[in-house]
Image: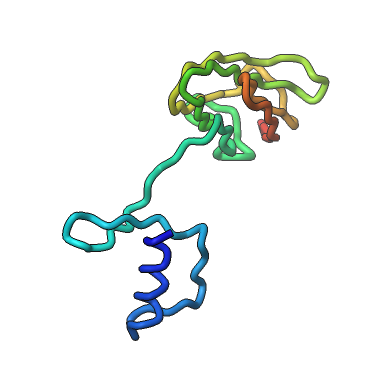
Length: 133
């Protein structure tokens, strides 16, 4: 709270700073031992995350895959499953805690809409991707 008040005081008392666009959720500052404000971002992983597939849509070829970024929370194991539109499992990958990039070429699958789902003890989330041939 003291840091937030200091930041607001700095914004009001200096012509270099403005309150426009200032949001409390954006404040991520600390004071070092010299009294200087250090506003370096502090990464906080609250839970497991399923990123967007890229590229999406993608074309199946020897050199063109789609990639899926996955972050698994410490102490958990997750499963990423790719399903076709009929709900049939196309691919399953198990991931340990940490950051992962999964790659799928889709070469044994037909064109269409697919879903990929992350399942961990704390989260289950599903997203969509499109395969073109």
